Amino acid sequence: MPFVILFFKKLYQRIRFENVPRLVFVTFFIILFGAVGVFYFEHRVNDNIVNMIDAVWWSLVTITTVGYGDIFPVTLGGRIVAVVVMLMGIGFLGMFTATIASMFVEQRLKAEKGLRAVKVMDHLIICGWNHRAQDIINEIRAHKGWRTEKIVLIADIDSKPIDDDRLYFVKGEVTEDNLKRANLAEASNIIILADEKLDPRSRDAKTILNTLTVESLHQDVYTCVEIENSENVAHCRRAKADEIIVSGEFSSKLIARAALNHGISKFIDELLSSQYGEELHKIKAPDSMVGKRFIDIFVQLKEHFDCIVVAIESEPAKAFISNPPSGYEIKKGDHLILVSKEIPEFD
Image (cartoon, rainbow, N blue to C red):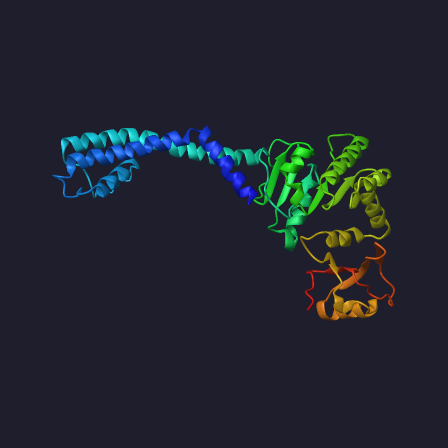
C-alpha cells in the first residue's frame, strides 16, 4: 500500500511539473466552447443537434479528428465555431497526448539507464558486471524455477546490458543508496561479483567491502560472493558472507582433475548447468524420511524418481557429507543433494 501511495504522489507531482492540468483545462474549455457555440447556432435549424448532448458529442468527435460525419453544422455561425474548434483543438489535444507520451518514454529511458528505483519483492540482486555475469544470468534463467523471476542488476555501466523484461537495472556502485533503490530489504538472494576493472588484490578488497555494506543493511539475505584469492576467504566470512566462491581456485582444481581424469570436466559442466542434462538439486528431507537409513533412501529415490543422492547437508553439524555411509540415519532438518533432471515431488 505505501508503494501505491508513493507512486500516485510522484505521478501527481510529475503531472503538475509538465503543466498537464493546464493543458487539460484548455482542452476541456475548447470542447465546451464548441458544444455551446454549435448548439447556439444549430439547434433550431439542424435536426441532428437538438440538445447539448448532441453538441458535446460533435465537439468531442471534432477535436479528436475522428469525424464520424453523423453530426455536422449547416449554418455559417456553426461552421465558424467548427473551424475554431478544429484549429485550436488539434493543437492543444496534440500537446496533451504528446506530453503524456513523453512522460512514459522518459520513464522507460530512465529504467534502461538505471536511474529509477526498483519496486520488486523476493528477487535476486547481482552486484557488478564482468565477463561471467551474462553466463550467470543465462544459467539462472535456464533453471525451471527462475525463468520468470525478477533479477536486479547493480552495476557501474552505461545502460542495461541485456534484453530481459524481468531484469531490472540500477546504475552505479554498490552503495547504501543504490542497494535501497534495488529494494534490498525485500530481496531473497544477492550475488556479489568481482570487479575486473581493478587489479586482483583490489578486487577482493572491494568485494569484501560490498559484502559488509550488504550485511549491514540486510543480514537475512543469502549472500553469494566471488573472490579471486583464497587467502581472503576468512575476511569474507568475517563480513558474514553465506557462500564464498574462489573463482581462480575452482578453475585450477577443475583443470587439474580434467588432466588426471580425462573428460571429467564435461560431466562437471553438465551437473552445474541448468541448460542441459542432469542437474544438482538441494531439497529438504521430508519428515517421512527422518530416522531411515541412507541406503534405503538412496534405493527408494532411484527406483521411484530415477535420481541419485550424492551428499547430505547435515543441519545439526552445518556440514556436507559426501557419499554418506550406508547406515547414516536421516535427521530432521537434513537436506539431500540430488542428481536428477527435475526436483522430485514427494507426497
